[in-house]
Amino acid sequence: MTSLFDLTGRVAIVTGSSRGIGRAIAERLAEHGASVVISSRKAEACAETAAAINGALKRDAAKPIAANISSKEELQHLIDETISAFGRIDILVCNAASNPYYGAMAGISDVQFRKILDNNVLANHWLIHMAAPGMIERKDGSVIIVSSIGGLKGSKVLGAYNISKAADLQLARNLAVEWGRHNVRVNCIAPGLVRTDFARALWENPETLKAVTATTPLGRIGEADEIAGAAVYLASSAGSFTTGQVIVVDGGATIAG
Image (cartoon, rainbow, N blue to C red; front, side, top):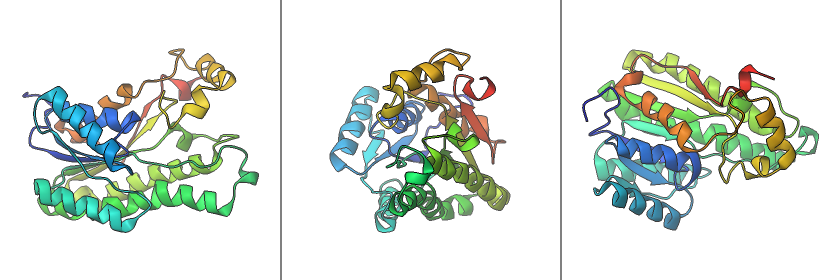
């Protein structure tokens, strides 16, 4: 493949990639030539996903390395094992996230709030800084944080989660400023409602689904694979002049209603 989107020879880590948006991103990065590390909490799920990708592409494109994003030690192990296996990290996709609470912010416990901030913001900060030294040394790298349109607006039931996703937007902007001189790009993707297990509580609720689709110009929610193209763009030379940005992929939900 010789195109703006060619990722041949590139090495990517995608967290939360055994299912949903993370898996779709990993599949598409591998399809475009990258070697991809599949990472989530459960080793068996990582292995199954990596095997499926390798079988589909008929090459050793994916390697499973389990890691819990709440553990700084496991994240460092993820980085170390990736470098040991592939010698480098060119692309980091911080996709894994947590949301243990659904409801008004007045009802959230301190433990739940801290878990959301720790897993959705602090863990990204840890992992990005673990992966960055090699990128900075080579003056080449792409960091992609999967945020949410929730980071751009308020919610009656997802307040703490939205706060964490807004923080991710600023994390990307700030690191883009810090690392631009090293040619390391940092961006966010902000999906709207997507049909994944993570968002099941939203799209399986008929009233929520009806309300979302009624004000979305495309009249439907998204599918996981519809987010992956933005990641391929940001990871490849096609996105070489894009940094500190938020690519919204939401069927038009944020421009209407």
